[in-house]
Amino acid sequence: MQLIDWIVLAMYFLVLVVIGLTAYRKVKNSADFFTAGGKLPWWLSGVSHHVSGYSGAVFVAYAGIAYTHGFTLYIWWACGVGLATLMAAMWVAPRWAKLRIKTGIQSPTEYLLARYNLTTQQIIAWSGAIIKVFDVGGKLAAIAVLLNVFTGTSLTVGILLAGGVSLVYITIGGLWADVWNDFAQFMIQLVAGLTMFVMILGKLGDGFSGVFTLWHRLPEANSHLFNDPYTPAFALAMLVIDFFSYSGGTWNLATRFISSSSGGEARKAGILSSVLYFVWPLILLFPMFAAPLFFKDMVDPTLSYGMMAIKFLPAGLLGLVLASMFANTLSMTSSDSNTVSAVITRDILPVVFHRVRKFTPKQSLIMARITTFSFTLFTIIVAMNARHFGGVFGLIVSWFASLLGPIAIPMILGLLPVFKRSGSTAAIVSILGGLLAFVVTKLLPDFSLAGEVATPMLTSLVLYVVTGFLVPGDESAKADELLSALNDETK
Image 1 (cartoon, rainbow, N blue to C red):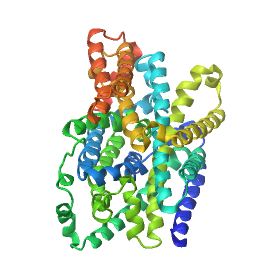
Image 2: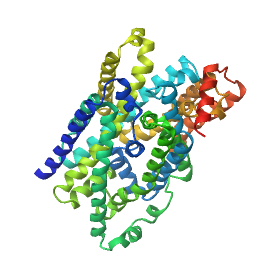
Image 3: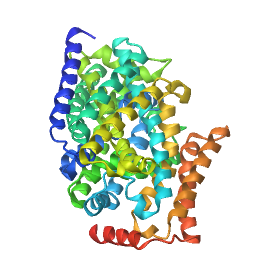
Image 4: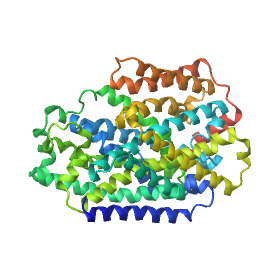
């Protein structure tokens, strides 16, 4: 890192401060803080949904996969997420916006009280909040690895820096600060990603045809659509997991739809995010695919992207690439912090402390900021102990992806009238069954990667449907009315 690189990085931090302060003036109450008052335009919501769907882990854990296994990463990750997001845009996204319009929800789990009951809502709220601590911690650990490669700072210092910056600006500006940072970071990522793409093409020496001739220089398996352990079964498992995640099972992504002004706007936001997933990763991942040609037999392939940037980018652009990766992580971690704090503030604390229900709008806003600060602090602690959970990839895939299904299935399927028979009993059975399946995959050594991530989700899915069929929920009139309204208004 040269002086100009540090200047570029410092300018990015200055942009964050300006965004936070500007957003601060727009936040008058908890609805502004958590859902931007339901005023997000579709293009801003779509870009935010896209960049909030991945973090610096792409440049660390996924860069390692691109180095060792090649093009399959684009197939099971980018295409899988793109297709899942498109399905979510068609079937689920408008329902989230309608929920806010009809019921005034500010958190993704708030509607579960009417759809199921208090017990189900609390199980999902508590479980999801705890799981998110591990997910966000993994992403903070990822950006710390990148900072170590670029600047030589220790992982602890990197985690404290990344977490500290996120902690400050999201606590000040809420969702408005988050989505505008998403937009700014996507612009930075476009410039940095295109620059890396062009530089690597130039180094390959074949002009644009290098996009295709590259694969002849790599191991044959690197050009395959599937490369063990990333098999078709794994890709299919991830597609199902991605559907539940990107349709709102990952709470910060649900918030992008909830905050849209109408169901139609939410649908357009989802379609934009889907298109970006199909197109942009082809450029973003290209330097990662090419890394084995320039750095052979790396002991730690997760460092490959950082090493490529250091080797080939001139002063100034190196700082821009680091800023884009830093921004990418902060966009996801900060949006997670904002949404989880909404769940804690709106759905958990009022049950634990009844006097919270009587808070004034000003007191609720203060509570929202305190909760956001506290949650981010916990994720920093987890990030500093990431090695105990299998590292960055272990936290994000083995833990979060495996645990997502049991929490997300009752949330997402509960929005659809076709699953009306599945009530609170089906929801609770599916959650507990999925969590038990996760424990089994961790205790038994013979599970493949596909089996490890798919078993908890498939267990929950089967239990939710079968239990709903065998033991239909005694749905309240309020739940019936809610589902009928969502069905009618999203046609």
